[in-house]
Length: 401
Image (cartoon, rainbow, N blue to C red):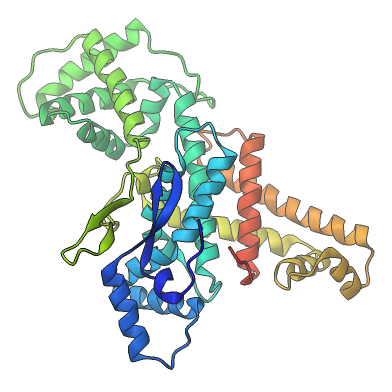
């Protein structure tokens, strides 16, 4: 991907991908007219990308301006592509390709803008990379978690909202949806085990299937709202097995290409961008499903890190500040504080390890009944996220993509 050279291009062009590779920049004529109009009417304003990024961000924030959002989406094409390229290289054998991750990143723009705080970091590009990189890792973890679950564990984990949306997406009739939903409700009511390891719960036996079927047949008279014949245990089991298939397909759909070139009435080539303000399956792929929950988790994570920072001794706090905020090397910190290099290095490592331990503990507390294990991959991902957070926290605004 060759970088865009001027403000007009940065805020009015979109990346077109072909075969999971960057092909070219495509101009959106409406955005080009918009940015040109602002530049021509205000020649005295700062002509830097930082100025215009914050300008369009404030315009979006104050007025929910869709045009401003599209300018920012254009601006973030490069960091989205770089983050997609990096995750694809690191996890070359997973289901998604670069174009898929790039689309996922584009669909996150609303969340990125909503959570971005220019008072803490004016580098929107770097913040966007942090958010989408974390999102990619969460998708991979979630997919791994879903894939290793049995159908029965998966059915216990998901919410009613996920069930209904999965069945609707699969194209079932309203009657079939209600039958599958009631079968799932009866299943959850009776398939209960007091066990901390939820991935390998026993498969329902014939006695349990019989009990689930009896409960379904009793409840169908009042819960379905229409007359249906009694169902058999085999039928209930088949419905639930198929429901699990629908859930997996719903949570991890095939990703269609975002990069569709169209031609407008003036024969100018433009990029057809879907309405990203609408609900997106990919934006809800985490089973917790509620964006408010995600925002709450961000606050909880920030609190966990802040508390861990405050528990460090004053020397360690100062070393971390010099390293992340002033961007000093370890040797420069040695000269500043008049300490030995091994001492500085040890304090940096110990400080990060203490914060990482607090972050891992917080991560485990999110779903203690669903996934209490911490493997090396999760530790690595949390460590990367911590490094990104510390740079944002200490105001590292000099990162160049």
